[in-house]
Length: 142
Image (cartoon, rainbow, N blue to C red; front, side):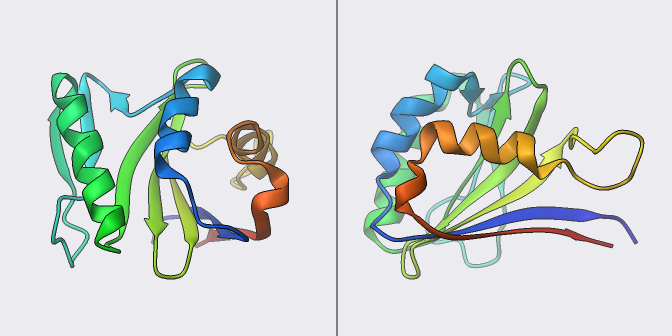
């Protein structure tokens, strides 16, 4: 059995997806990984991720906004261009929660098998104001 690492965030206020997407590039995050974008399509109930060319960026942004407005789970991959790590980002509009599944070259604590969550949290705090966060749970599951 493999490892799954996740960060679960409960927010105090409604999540501003447009603001978030507008800020991520300022901090070296991108939706593009290997010239493609991974996202959850509209009307998806089974987490069947789809991959499109990075040139379809504007189309994907429109899909994500429509999903949020319809209270569907919003999902896309994010990759950090300097840290060379990333995650699958999930936003659950009905509960106002975020879940980050750390997938791309997870950063570990030294030579251990445990995730260095501090690095990810420092990056998230640059984009999401700490005052907007009610709670955070970081978890490695084996």
